[in-house]
Image (cartoon, rainbow, N blue to C red; front, top):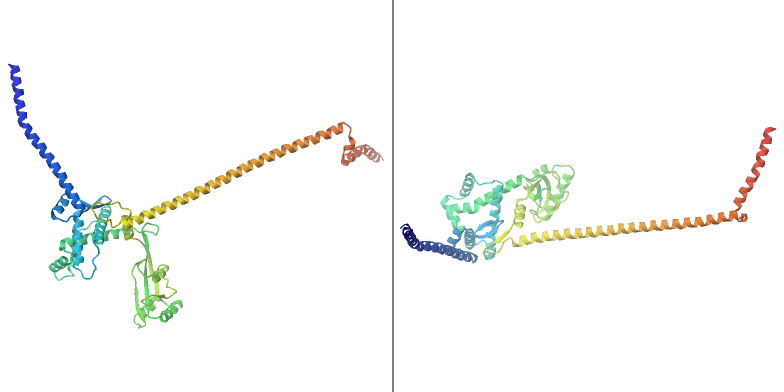
Length: 427
């Protein structure tokens, strides 16, 4: 009985499992279908994005999948942001009569370069803990609206120029610019001396601009005679022969014409140019007021872009391609120069080693020769001595030198001389 019950329960469980299996198969199939559909839609979206599709359906999908048009240092540049700003910039050029519309490639470069720089600035600002506050935005908005009779008029102008609302203008244009200004201010605060990277010299100078060189020379003569530049400049403000008297703010190299720049950046604070500088505007006398060293934000950003890892994910041009190629060329040239210097140093070292070894070998050879010559001299001296001894023993007195004979005579006379001396003492 028990065996029959067990068999019946097994049959019932089998029937139940058979009833459930179609449901499981349907669920598994549905999941697989969803995965395949997802992959298919994603692939469709990627292909359309690569071909720069601007259809609302594609833009909806690219936004859903968070697709990027490019990446800089791993930071994604949103495809939707790129298309949106590309459309707005085209709209701007189409509605302007003062500007010649650039090519599509240049417009794309403008859009993508701005988005990439903004991404770098955002990343650097996060590291420096720099933020845009609501008060900052409110202040900028107030300053902007002060140029218009009403907010509606401002909205109308923005829509006409860029196709943007006021809120979009603040988000897309004003906030990135404000963040860059804050980062620049923080960057400049950290400058200490000329040896730091990205540090440049800035100069503040006063000037007097004359109509003729003769007028400028007469004032220069007074300054050289000891009169004060500032006093003369103040007096000349009301004179007809002077075009302008004033002061430039902080100047960096590259902002002035070369003839002025060469003088300004070679004077110390308080010094007046000892020459008259001629330009298209007239004849200048210049005095440098102050000098300082500041960190160059633009050079810093430029270098950050050169060293960035940029990946283009759709069919658009890399706006920083030429810049990065120049950077690589400079690096390759520096490496090649170092290799050449290393090679030259190695050659010099090998040459010195060879010279040193040759000197050691020469010294060893000379020492061996010297020892050999000494041994030969000793052998010659021994032979001569042996011959002399043999001559003496053999009674060959005739071969003695005159000096030896003279010594023998003295030895024979010595006893008689001693006897004479003794006799003299006794007397």
